[in-house]
Image (cartoon, rainbow, N blue to C red; front, side, top):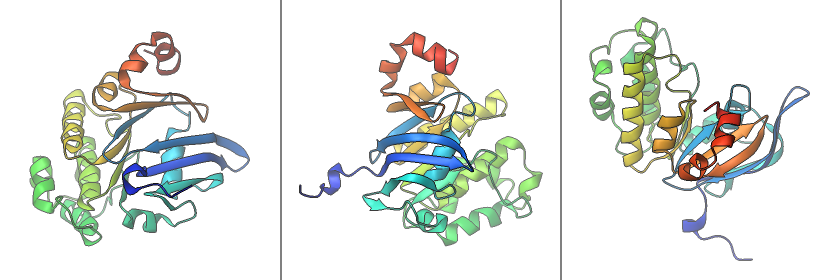
Length: 241
């Protein structure tokens, strides 16, 4: 069989991933692909394996079986910094900013590893005016919403090919949640490939090209938002809607 052409090669592909924490299996034979420019909503109740899956993608957790491919390249055993330099940016749940560094220093560190691209410091500060007003504030002096903006801005500064957002709106006030969703919608218009983990069903289905639902480490649904909305029993059972 001839090799796949570049146009048909997914940006990210998981093949039959089994991932464990110690003796406890967290993912069971996960297979999926994300096309270039696609926005994926990864959904499910707490503890279903969503964060484990994205941590497996970026090398923070090693699968016991299966493969992860980035643009056709096997990165299953690659170190996290190698994967990051290949264009995968991860905004973890809890934000993961450098608390004792200033906003400017947090963004500057990301800029030193940046690939060529449109996301520069001026553009990130234009996207998040709050950060422009707080450049000299330390990370631990920011509000939760500002910390989330900093985490997203830092990821964008690397000019990633794939952006992974894990619960970017969790615990934020409604106005700040809407500001983060506005940002995600803007990022989507740039054509950046994005995977979003979030529990806000209406917001995710409004922005995603496809929805993937995990239940106890297995995929129970993959499809377009309209296909999901056509199955209210499934939404109620697995998403509480």
